[in-house]
Length: 414
Image (tube, one colour):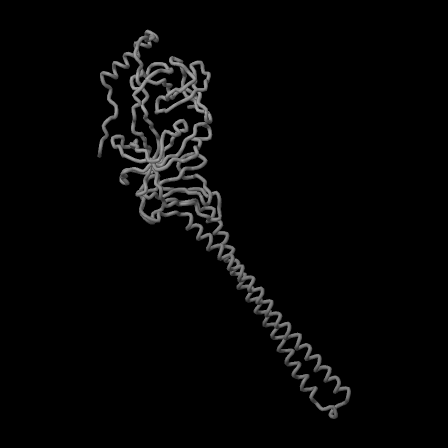
């Protein structure tokens, strides 16, 4: 196990500085006059904020995080239920093997639906069997009647064949009428038997369709249950997406909708840095700029990088803030998939340049940005329009609006 060396150890210099602050708090503020202008690095951190003259150091710090440009996304399936409750999901950053479960959704609703559909399917099949028996009986009865009418017709046909001279005229006509009657009854019986078959086939087809539909419903429900388990398509690490309503990674009991991305397996060979450039620093960074990246998790390791691109439109940091940032994508000269993970915080430092001349400076903490206008927050809380030059993480060059010595107050919105 590797133990990290503490990043800060108090020295005698720090102890003297703390003692100095304690004495100042007892004696009150002391006005210092006749001193030479201080550079940014020499400015007393305990002094009140004010406009001052100093040497401006062109240094820019950005914050960002490791991101993967390529990833396999795991989305909420369309299982004919919504919203879909999450029953279980893997921990953020855990390593998984291909085929291992990453997310399980609550299937209780589909199981209830499956039970109902299974009952309907069994009932439909039983109704089909019963209908077949019933229709077979009706068809048999119709065919039996047809056979009877056929026998009656054949008898009447034999009787009508007796020559007229062997019986009376009246008997001859009666036999001919009975033959015609038997023929009509046979025709009606045949038509009824044929109609009965057609009706039976129609009823059976309708019932067979009902059986197929209920069975398809059962199959869909079973398939939906299988869909409600998301597995890893390959080996990798799990990166949980953020709950868009809560602003945090998804967790069990959250409800989601079909199509939403709930997790991903990032391709660790495509790691870059996505950083934020505040609008106040617009124009102070451009593609091709060389930077130094330092991971918060490994502060002793610095990685050279190059700015690839900067978005042309700034977005709000959040709905409650007026601050806007440009997204910056940075390519690193080297990555370490064994230690670097998407989501890790990164500090980006642009290589410093020293202007070497005394300039009027204003603490950045006292600058308020509103749209394209910059305001300085005075000690009494009022705001004064100012014109800024270059900025670094602590101060900005003041081009106009205030004079040296003006006391300031940290802005509420910076």
